[in-house]
Image 1 (cartoon, rainbow, N blue to C red):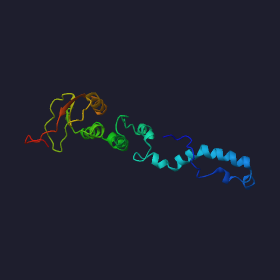
Image 2 (image 1 turned 90 degrees about the vertical axis):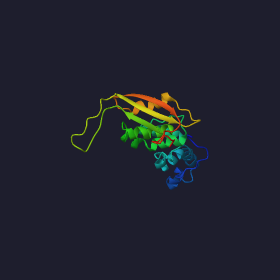
Image 3 (image 1 turned 180 degrees about the horizontal axis):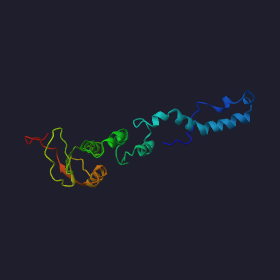
Image 4 (image 1 turned 90 degrees about the horizontal axis):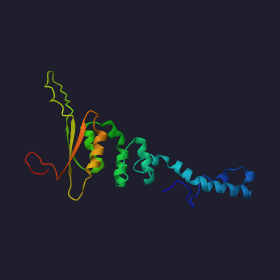
Length: 190
């Protein structure tokens, strides 16, 4: 799609009709303004629909990467269009939760459609009780286990890139891609 001249697109605001009465019968003035109408019709149409361009669900597909750059959604052109639109729509929420376990889990779910188990080795804990036990010594590693579904291969380098982008700076990141679904406490698949 393009926002350039669109053949046959009528102008909702023809300039010739807005000219003073003395130019209403002037053939040259009407032809000249009709040429301007042809050039300006796509611009005016875009401006009339401007709110739709800023809505990730309604924006034209070719406008989506530009809209994504505004919110730093980091969309992948290889993703299906609905996933790219969802990433742009949820970008602000994901940025707000960036660096947290929940934020990373949601980001991986959005980007790859997978569930992740995250082990944070940062050595951080909190408690509402005084004199609580200190956290264990930090491992300095963020371990992310991602489970794939059969028939849907997952590129480990792409997953690692997403994890590293969301990983706190003081931790290294490691990704393990495992087959199947996680098991619950009884050992049966969930």
